[in-house]
Structure formats: structure tokens, C-alpha cells
Image (cartoon, rainbow, N blue to C red; front, side, top):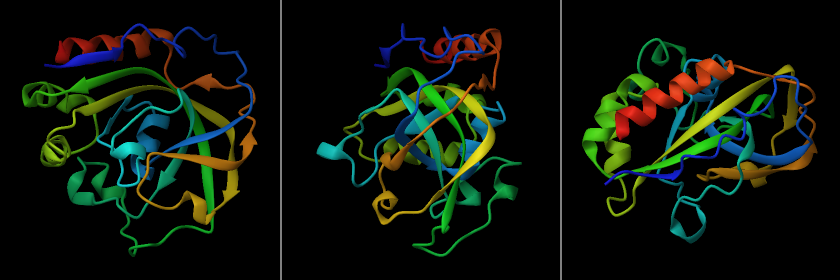
Length: 207
């Protein structure tokens, strides 16, 4: 059975475009190509089963407001739909940039757990991954549900460049940046109406 862990929370949707977030230091690690899709308003959906280094061996949402931290090492073009696949450049195992561009942040407004494959099939139009990859992610750790995160994304007026630190490495979802970053006054990538429309479509697909 599929369930909503937080259907009523609409942190970002309730914010005015002129609202200013206070500085914070927690970040969500995700493929760089997925973060770009969020920043371009092409998706609001991320999928999680949890990284190898997740606490207690399972996925948990530690923060609702997060910086979007791009990763490159595990991106695979054959796991992405076009045109996203064509934009990925392979890197060597263990590679990381000397500096990391932070281009936006997000409020995680909804969290769903998916336990039925049919719901995953209905979500195919709403994310950037191939059906094969989505299915493999769903089957990994079969006793654990697949979590869906819906993110209201905000793009910075100017990217913040931070130095890479060894504490950021590893297969984990959450990291703490070495200092708080001030997002300043930002505007959401999608309007309230467009974001709510995406929410309605996704919740209808898995209900």
C-alpha cells in the first residue's frame, strides 16, 4: 500500500516569492543533472531508498529546507531519459570537483512512501530517470519502501561557490556545509499555481 508521510505540509507553497529565507547549512546530495532539472522547473520529484551511509540503515528526512548539492560520480547516462542522458559526462570513480557550485535551495513539501510497483509506473512522466532505473531503485532493499520527495525549488540570483571537503564525500543523502549560506531574497522556480498542479498530478497518480 502506498502512503503519504506528509501530505498537508506545504512549507514553500505558502511562501511569498519575496520572502527571505534565513541562512542555513544543511544540504541534500543529488545527481547534478537532477538538480539542474529541479532548477529548470522540469521536475519536482526525487526518489530515495537511502545511501549506504544513512543512519540506522534507512532513509530519513533530516531537514525540510535544504541546499541542493550536486554530485557527479554516480551519474549514468543509460539511467536517464533524453535529453538528460546526453548532458552527462562520465567521471572517474572517486572524482570530485575542487569547488562545488550551489545554485539553489528547496523546501521539501511532501513525502510519500511507495510500496507497489504499479504506482511507480504511473509516476514515469514526472521524473527524469528511465523506467529500468526507477524499477531497480524500487527493488533495491525490498523490505524498505521507495520514498518520493516533492521539492519547491528556489534559484539563487548568483551561484555560491564552496570548497569541496572530505566530510562531504560518501554515499549519503544529507551533509552539513562547513558554514551557513545566506540565500538572500529568491523567487521560486515554479509559481504557486504550477507547483500545486504538479502536486495534484503526482498525488492523483499514486492514490
